[in-house]
Length: 207
Image 1 (tube, helix red, strand yellow):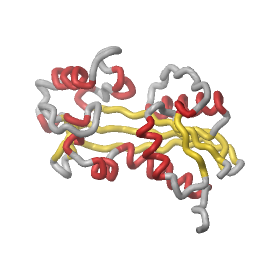
Image 2 (spheres, one colour):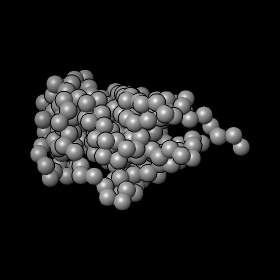
Image 3 (cartoon, one colour):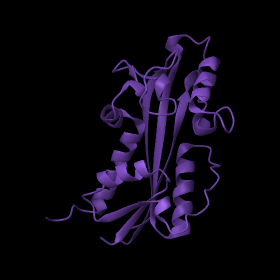
Image 4 (cartoon, rainbow, N blue to C red):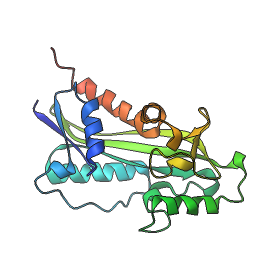
């Protein structure tokens, strides 16, 4: 195992989850908090999820020299012309809680009928660095279609999950189990595409 894959996050849960998925590949998965001196967080100035994901992957690769995986994701609501989009985490201004952002979203949609409350979660994962001696700079993007509910439902998940209805299952993301969410979500889809790409360059180790 001579390749280190840096996950550009300080969330140990996300690093642990990815490390488990990559367990069959000959690489060591670490997060930003595993670095001796984590680099400063870059400003996300991209106009798209792909631009922000690449910005972060390129930045942390340049700072550390490590193969780096970064992601950017958010909610795009059709009735709001795609907002909050890349500003999902900062919707309504800095400092708002997830609950406050949800209430702001519902307020802006209060006069919009159900059939026009269509939305999608989008996730783009970027991979930058050297993989088996070859320079790579790839993105893997996926979306998850749904509808914004009239009020929050469920206690699982985070962010906008309580108001994003999976119309196939008839439940919000916050009402799904972690396994159900991983199987259907935008992040799960994008991650599986990235892992497939990685597995092609990292054949499973022989037992």
